[in-house]
Image (tube, rainbow, N blue to C red):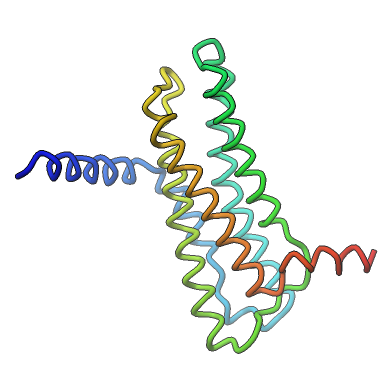
Length: 190
């Protein structure tokens, strides 16, 4: 087997092993709160289901942010200024996702539910995968001895995952009638 293939295969095995180390409880909790869009015909059920799902996803992302901040706090004397900035930027990415998860308004499936619900389910699946990968990458940052390798490689992947998470959450918001313009509708009602 060529060396490049061996390295790629080894990386895949490491990824699978790290994926297995993600807390089953965290991912199970998130999966248990996946929306069942058939119940979205009732406004109250839709709001409750969305709240539970968004809180579960937010809790997982909070764990990511807390880990990053704990590393920055515990290892401040070891981290370079650039590494601290990277952690700050990653935490800012997480904060932007929280703003999208916290979108207010009336939850209503946009368009034809027969077309929109499968799209929403696909976005939910993407959110699960991205959240899991973000958690894996975050936990790969060892709080005892943060490595330059993590900041050069995994931090970039984590940033991309968080950007994709944010975009996916926004796409989901639009399909649920919670686009950014819903913020202005809420302000007008106040």
